[in-house]
Image (cartoon, rainbow, N blue to C red; front, side):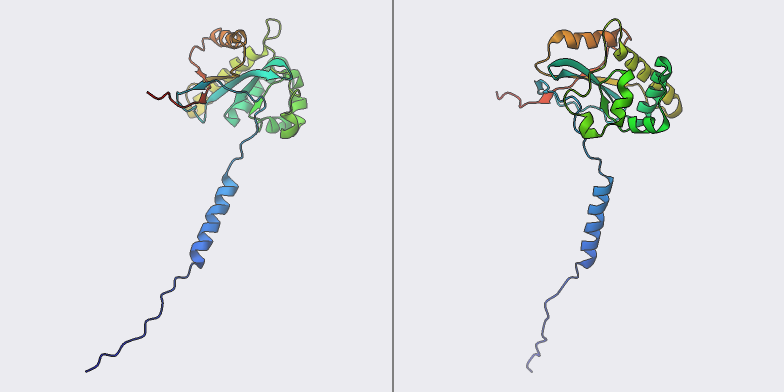
Length: 213
């Protein structure tokens, strides 16, 4: 008896649901991603083969370099709540009142390099204008006006107060210097930190290939 062959139709898969999920995931990542802000003081770091990653939280970065042919130091505070608390303590120390709006705007600034007396002007600027060459004069660190010392001190004080509330741990420091920067400027930063018993800090470098044997 002859077998009856059944006609087989090509199978099809409805991809509509998968496309919807893909677009939802794409939208989620776009909305939650944080754009990398341009560096306020771009530097070319010296090369190294060490691959130790800096922490994402609890970090203070001191950037040393030249801008408009002048040696300058910029300060970066990683955590937003620490920026706000540090500004509050510096405001009390220098008797400079910042409004709630100015404080909220300062919280968004990852790195800055001006005397505290000029901070209000920088806060009002947009990111693009703020990061233009020559706009920020650098944080004073000479013997008569050592504001960098005060920023480091108050940042540690602020971190200590926040640590009592959430147990975030000790504040870490990193020095990011230009590869062409003269050593005395870097040494001055180290001396300021060591005057506050901060003897453990990282030196930021660029990655280079290991030499072949």
